[in-house]
Image (cartoon, rainbow over all chains, first blue to last red; front, side, top):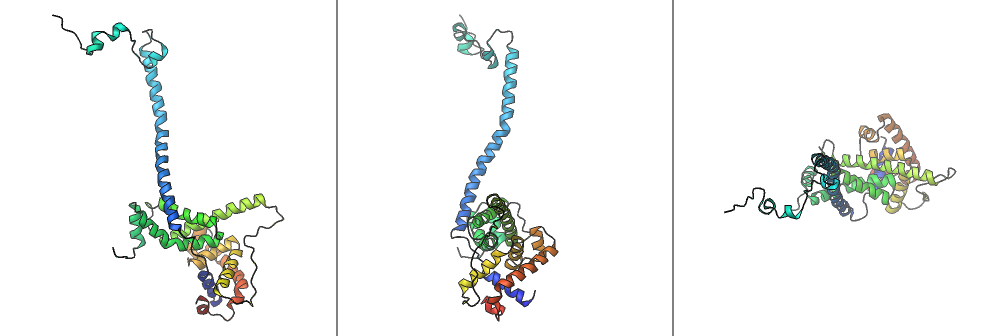
Length: 108
Length: 196
């Protein structure tokens, strides 16, 4: 560079505007905090999006299995899908319902 | 605690560990370099502020990967220049959309002060900034990196993604243009006088 060019370089360097408006660092830190909060939400959303198809597929498979396994029992479609047991008064007051599966009542 | 100056590496390590105060110190330390690049490229205003903030946000995101192969200042100036050039491209596209072809968009319409006026600091500042702002953006980018940030020709070429020969030719032309604008303020003035 010639002396004249160096002089131009010094002029440019000395007179450049080298500050943002006051409080710049605070504004950047505020954005960092906002970004941190947003990135947590985004991470949860990403996990949710990943899990939803798996959960939906598992639910459909389970419902299909329930329908298939109770196809001869004569239950309704919804009851079959959800594998709901048939509830009658007699069944509700049966010893098995009252005392559990092994609830054989000893009779004297 | 005594107010000891911390190195960039030390502050980066603390910022990585989640110390926001350390990161704020890095921002304060390098704000000047980033501001000089963004304001010289885009002029003072929201665009330059956005570029400044985005530069530090990107650095914060990349804290874990930052290896310190280049100095932090060079790294930040690199990001700021890329973001500034993108902002200029966006600005040009929006101008092309809204300004008819027979109107030439002029970014900085400022009267050029005559050479007979006293060149006090504020006026000289105005003249120098206007002269830099009047350069074409490619030439301005070279001036910002080579003259403002003292980057080498190779660093400038890398940051701008152009050959070194292009950097040299753009710098030469930019210097000619700046000399034409600033010569009234340089007559008889030595570097020391101007700098002082």
